[in-house]
Image (cartoon, rainbow over all chains, first blue to last red; front, top):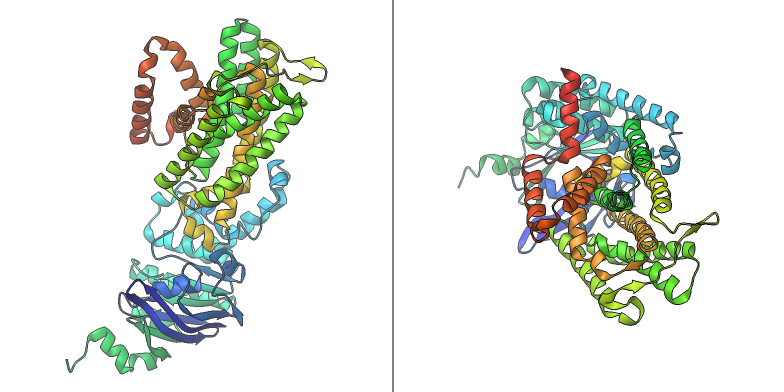
Length: 249
Length: 313
């Protein structure tokens, strides 16, 4: 379970997050809000890239607020990025190595002496498995520059998935995808949660959120203005105001 | 598991052997020895910059630390030559660790400036500590290395000895390139944030790579001191750091053959244009600009591309 409690973050005079608190349990959860609401800032706090001015983040009752990103990863939290963070120099398949490089590393000596064949076999098997789950098996040998955007998005998801997280943070997974790609992505995310992996995603596409999410947290100007099921959020007046503006104004 | 590039290693062994038997001229042999010194140093810089993205303009300093440790310890204290190599490597590792701890938090130009500053400081120290380093006049009378009772005291013996070291180093480098660990460096170079979010302790890995390559540079520096018998600060100046940078870039960053290719070209080239020595830096600068603009993968990338086209056709 992820518990965000009283998190505030300021950049100079700008308050990006202000006393944000919520808890999420298992399944698919979404973090929504208009542009500049502080969603990615909150993601950066949860994944350790930003340290908050106040408050704490607990994952499975363990305080992870002060931990660096690589320690948070070890606690079972993986993330994807808004701007694709794939490595151009290597193939898409090799990009997936990053997801397991700290979990399945062989000894450098063994690897250099070329006696780590079982390890590589295991790596290849795992890669095949996640490529199948994310429907990208046929693209593995290409470099990122040669593959369509939707495929790259799925590879980013596959890279996070191969690290076997218990909580997956997805930063705008559906952004830039067409309808059939979104449908495909929704199926993959459902498949992932059926494997026992919880998801927290930042997303702007409301139909995508409504189809998938169990609970929704809505942020505006760095504050939580709504929390509940999608139906509850849709009827929340503050949320409506945040998205459509104040009718009385 | 990627296949190793055996062809390149076989080529190195064949070339060095054939050259030894066909060319007896000591001057030409000395050029090949210098190519090998530069190739190892450029390849180490390639690991730093081409693989891990750590731009260092102070690599000559670590080469110098090895050379001066061996020089000072054998000339002033008469310490066993082999022991001086180990001491030089250890000192270089520790110095690199201490220097790298704060500086490797920097990136790009800032890191280049910090390492350049470090290189300049070490160069000044070599010049100013006249009592032990000999100052600008250098240090003479460095002992020769002896292996299994054979004193390596002439060009031919050193050629054989250093060829073995060089081929061994190239094999090591090739095996490293094909290891899982090399990906870690590539990932760090391309995206530190993605690497961190997948559990890599980026600062620690960069520090280890910086200290380890510096340690190897010091070993090569010690061997250089044994080879030349005389060392002076000019061999470890900023110019040598820049030479190495141009060699690695020209040969091909992130490629195992890059360091050797660049070193071969830029070591032999000045000998061919010795009449234009004053213009060397202009030529280097122009070459660097052309490579960066038109052939970012360097000569090794160009060769790979051409071979690829040939295979396809």
